[in-house]
Image 1 (cartoon, one colour):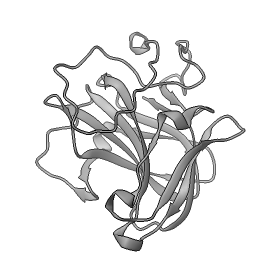
Image 2 (cartoon, rainbow, N blue to C red):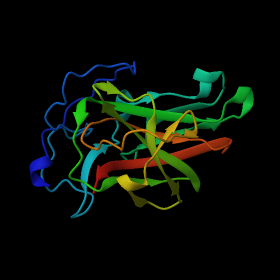
Image 3 (cartoon, rainbow, N blue to C red):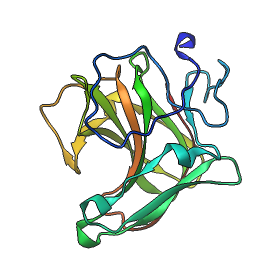
Length: 212
């Protein structure tokens, strides 16, 4: 694991899905706010490594994508908190066939996480169910569909460990079949989403996202 920890790169937020890669680059990592070169001891615990810290500058690295792309009116944002972490918050509306809110961030190059078992997120919230979503590179292009795993954010801080085996392929809320296996050697995008008719206000406080 120690060999994996490289200097963390600033993210390039690319707004198009149709990105062509001639080849997968050497393993890099996602960003770590407020600490561009973490030490090897910068871990969630002895078995987890931090990829992303949600510090005061977190909003500049995350793009909001709500159901407005489909005509909905849900709203969300990510903002820093005085305590030193951030909150993903907003209101989900089911009007106009809407019903989801999300944020996402992309690495400057595909990230090789194949030596790890899954992703970990330290969060607390409102007892609602959230989706941790990832996109990968297949055949030189970022997939149009995502892989997602769900967790329930209780009112106390908890580190949710989500195995890569628990991620399922989805596209516009529909489960997919007949897609290639999850390519953990070329992860390019990570996101958070609330959906499944959970209308009304929501708030998910997030501290770190890592691998285990």
